[in-house]
Length: 632
Image (cartoon, rainbow, N blue to C red; front, side, top):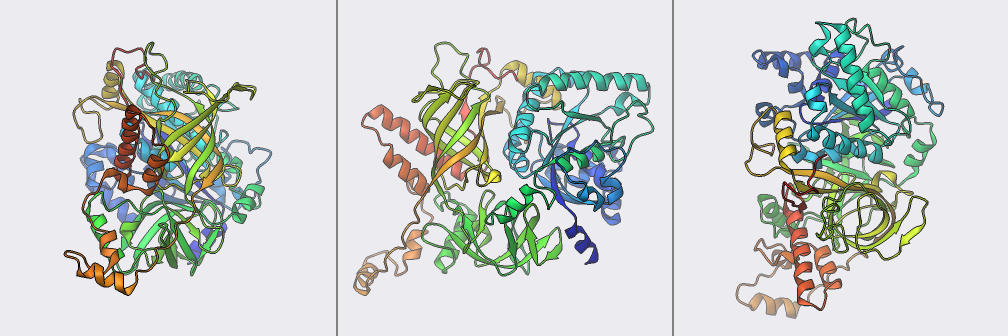
């Protein structure tokens, strides 16, 4: 208990590790945990036995614990690990100089880091974005081998990840770890130094104009541990900090980490918001949703409200059947989908807590909500203090990074009015209908007040209408819930496919499960910030039936007496019934012409499919020989 109490007194920060596939993210995180005491002796001995014939996987298996992940050699979802840095490590001599705006108190008191390992495979980009949105500092892990640095797959994926890290976190909070320097460090240190310099020049060109200052680059070897937590005697040519020292310095400059800073005080004063990263069902405890406090505070006994509501039971599954049974028994929330729950207890990385503040990761033991009703992207708020509300539409300022069809002459623009954008905001993803576009030049002057489409490089103010329940907040009121990215998928050209196959170690399958077929390359289309939100009005509670009407209904063949059974039946209705958002937007935007009705029906069908799918993609396909194909 004393250890957890001392850790609670330290500043908390979340560090996310991102990078292309096979860059060494999991190995770096696992090796840091071993070196800094984040792995207990029993776990380490078990991993050593299991990897006796695969020594190169020793440290990555500390993080990747699923059988499928170990067999395939890749990370499928984000992993969280807590690490307490003592004052001597947090303020090591190798650390970078602190920014003038930061306070040295956190380094003198130690530091608690939550390390987030993210997938590197492009097919898992959805989970990677969810991890990035919850971080204070990003570590971009880069493979220093020339064959990787020169590949189009590396340049395209690394640029997208850097865009996400600088836009969704902070431009000053990016550290680049140049990995695999150990390949030549033993043979000739001069060659290792030259490799690091060459890789640094390539990375600086790639990240040009993304950060106000040149990025912090640190040479490391994730497998051998060189320069991970302390300067390596085999890298005498490197005068800079270790990776841990560089991360500690970046954390010092991250806004909101120091508890006495203005950003931290503002976060504490905001209403409670916890975007859920996952939900667990623990024996003897019950439903445990988990996430990071974006703002506010929570304690035992808090009356919580959870939004958005679960997926429609029309997407038949075991979870939907369980949800229907729970609803029939009287569980659930309000008529507009709100779920009410009482917080019975709090826990943070197996430590019981009485309360938690902004920036901390917690698990909530809630009463009154079935586990099948919660999913990643739900938001926890306090019922009596400015609770979260669903967005009917929102206005945002966006910057278009890429339009896969913009360079194809004679082809229609895909980023036009009516485009169904797949928006990633906090831990949620939702298809949103593009309703209006107003473009600006770099000086902020209006170019077109009623544009019909967006081009690559455009800066615009757009109106987006979610087609599924979604919680967003204006960026000025709640930065963590007001930054978003727009993702799409393009059919990769042969050069990209060949490059990624080589980066992946061979094989023709494009997906993480090795499925055959053309490789679909997920790409980041745009980045944006929410400026204003139009909220949905709470739906009124249904009026109770009169005894006479109930008796007539019960007398009809095949009709039961309980209205909840009819409301939660698992028979498949029309796809539009999957979401009240889809019904509202389809009815509001219903055109007169037959062709437009078909297009609107397609958007509605896509929204219903995305809502019920675990890996949604908005496909923008192109032939491999088109000039607009994705080439990084």
